[in-house]
Image (tube, rainbow, N blue to C red; front, side, top):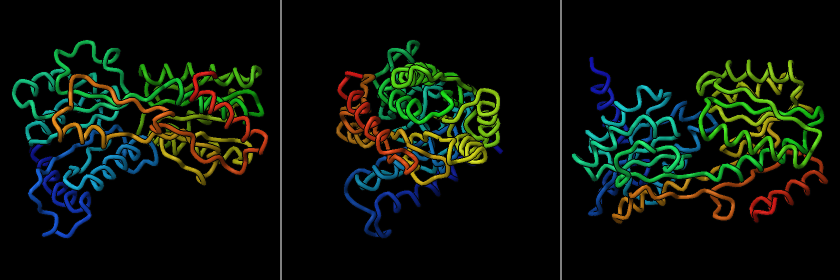
Length: 338
């Protein structure tokens, strides 16, 4: 049977459940005279991965609940870039109002879908997260139905680098990424630079392309960094694979091996010493869809000043003097004086 015939049935169930979950109302009260909008979310890993996928899922569901007249279709999890264009087209055909691609890999794959929708169904809008349209969408024929959320990569990565540089005892810190993307390469460079600014004796090493769905792959990558390179602090950006990174650090001794989590605050998780947090401003995009101002390749910036990113809770493993230094450096990062 065709994959998207099954998707339609799942989506119909998701819409029914999502209408109640997002509105927080009983079935009869959920009906109103206001237009009801539909949102779809495409993610590279599980929706409950404690990381990338869940940060998007939580942001969209929270926005639906607050706005009241938005329904989230059951999210399509573990989606590859290769399969994502057909999926995005299926959402256009289903009448979805806002289709959210959580990552640059989806933005690069959807150019033809976006162009076709602009001509045949212009009310279908596309939101991509963690991208720069100028840099990541050079081949798009139109951006009239597109917006983006761009994280200040330098600020985000610099916070992690400060923590890693100040917490390492081996002077070797690691970075683990699910894929080699413009976003991950830029963040790794900023991370490594920040490490050396706060600790000139420290050195950063990396493991790219571990994937986003396999915890064992994350664990193996972290074990290599710990065993071969002497790494004792790792900042990881690999969705579900991050859980494997944390397991490896815990196994190596959580009192001396630390993870900097992202993009949710995972304070209290084993080995987590800090988290670099993204508060995805998807509600702003939804409001723009409803008021007719969405589009034109506009960018919503998530940065420290606007509250779109922040440093999460520091663990008790961070000494008071190091905590003060971290807080001071984060203030400098926000002020642009780091």
